[in-house]
Length: 276
Image: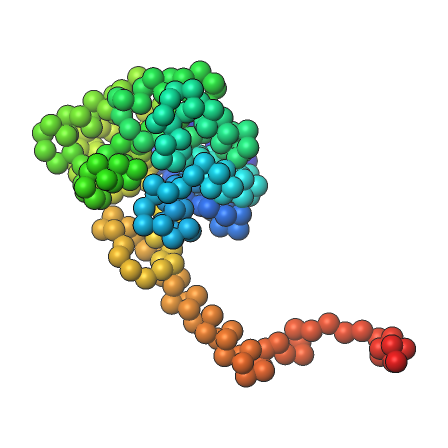
């Protein structure tokens, strides 16, 4: 099976075929996502929340992202791997943005990068594209703007912000981005954006009319307790299963029932006798 490319993603929209994307942050999980046939793997800066334990994504560094990208790209054989450009990796200057995007390709082994923002990112995106690096846009609820937004709030609910979101989507299209993530926007607005632009839209909390969907894998697998956003569906609930296994391990080790004889290795008795 050939690796998914930007052309594959664009063609899916033309054929009205839905696009699948999930996050992954390590080798073993990425291998399973790839084997399942998911089109795109996002090495998301959400690793700040679900892997590194930060309150938000703002503390994630380029070195963090490259480290996890390497692990994911070692596993992915067919899926397109997209590196998520972290906070301040593309804000200071266009030159620095291109250099950091290049690190995802050269060091991280990714096939594309994703960055947040609309019309204000056009020059940056064009410069990254000039370096032959495909770009995924990201508008709506952009987590790196959490302080500016005053929290994780749905975007585009009033006329002014809805117009801005449509215009930003068109700006990303004209800049050369090959697809755009729509996060935390009303379903009907995401539908309008999807119909208005020629590049695919990937929704997360943006309803069913987007050309594709993305979720944080830890959310959709139910790997932890606590608040889960409204837009997340748990396709399984691993947390209680994992806890049961962990407690079972602790219990058996303490009781001396694990490891049992079948978990050990043998050697010839005469070898052991010659030790003394």
